[in-house]
Image (cartoon, rainbow, N blue to C red; front, side, top):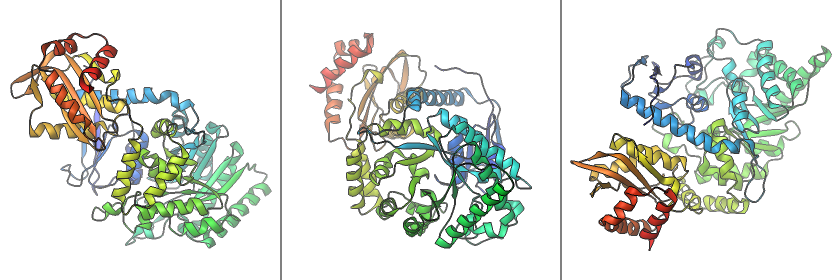
Length: 561
């Protein structure tokens, strides 16, 4: 059992139910271990930031945490400590497994080169992003420099932050986005008016003419920083060709002013964030004024499907697997006349990676923690297969159909049901719950399930129907779940028997986890296993075996004949 020193854990709940990105950054520190919010979805900016910094965040619309409460757990009980230790151990083991991939380039199985980049919110994140395997910075959200302060950063402060990232990049691609204030990213010192729908209102590039000094200060800082390395400058929420022309003229005017002042300006390019549907038109016609664009899938989905991703009543409509949205995405990639990337949360979702590649995207930006896993997945994919998968998805009639299709295609590369890595021998375990968590965590570490937590939940749902203690000191917990990528048989042998409920103690736990695509072979394995366990010699082989490889071979031989 893992044992570590007790620690302080801090959780925060805002009075409005939603913690702003600025509040999150103000709270961030060594004692912040988790956040509970009453509102927020997978693509809210606070959730994205928390994921980037590795801070667990739970959105609970009916949370009982008092508004504005600050929760401090000074001495977590043994159960809470144990669970956190197991979760940290799982995360560390997954990181170690993926670590060699950080030094590899992103290449598909058929040799197609794909750049996998990192999204960051602070300059200080750049070093860890490159260490995690990022081949560049695909999105540096500069608004975090401006939030939760009484005055904006001056030109020099911004310059130092941008220069720091470019210096660390050592010539790798760096995309810095200009100020994106508005929506769920307020900025008090600008005194912006209250709007009925701020996401469709006065935000991002639409603010720049009214706050021209603030914008010019950022442009100067960015252009000065380009002397430290090649820089791509991206402007958010661009919806018209007139805005593009204005931006092009303004950037070149400032560059000329800097040259006149004798200030060095390096290599830089201008681009836009394609996050409103009109971008489809712009990508065909704007090559004269911009060099690149990056699809911001978070906003593009909600604008295209006309659903506020933070509104619980319509959040179900927000789904980037919607066939109509996938058609828009593929058309953007097909019709663009400028270099194209994608930098929304969609880029970090392994389920849709084949669709992005099938559409022709060869630059994808995501949270740094997802890059190594994306490289591993990329190495298993071929572009012809990805194009076929995209065409099948475009022929679907709903997001649910697309999701089902992706599950079927992801299951095409099947791992063996039996594997020595799935045997946990002579473990010191004190409870049924601990045993189940260790087994399901191991499945996630071995990349056989999308989420160990989801499979753990499915196991407990089956346990609630009836106990899976079989007798003979053996339990056979099992489930069939969409979270299972590859059907697996796991085994845990305990140092000392533990209670499985209903007065039954067990020494062996054999877990069967089955994917939804499984056609029925798992029932044959389950039935044969139940019969075999009635034989004392078979049980003794499992209880006394010392070599995981030999035991795995015996299990496969006995259960699949």
